[in-house]
Image (cartoon, rainbow, N blue to C red; front, side, top):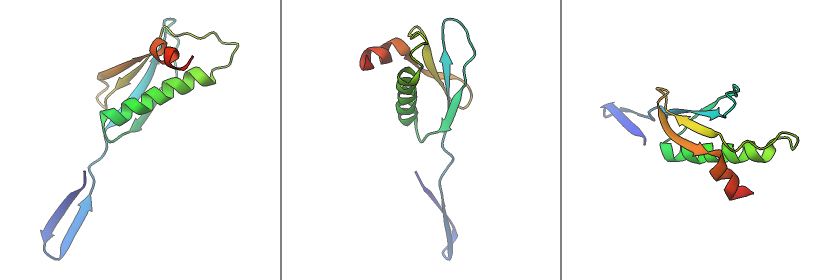
Length: 97
């Protein structure tokens, strides 16, 4: 959404409000700390698509000597760090393997 602000007829400026920031936190059963990802997305739907792609990528690119731990989840949190969605790795693994 783009907002147009006009203070007078000669000067108008267009600005776009900042996009919401979302965090992707990998949670596994062994409580190992994982690198957190985050980004700005226009809406929750786009953030969920990016989180799902990140989960698929994690499962695809893991070294084969590391066992597949599908008992975890990729949690999506909003900019206030409130959980807004959870992607179960087992569900993603069933889709791709």
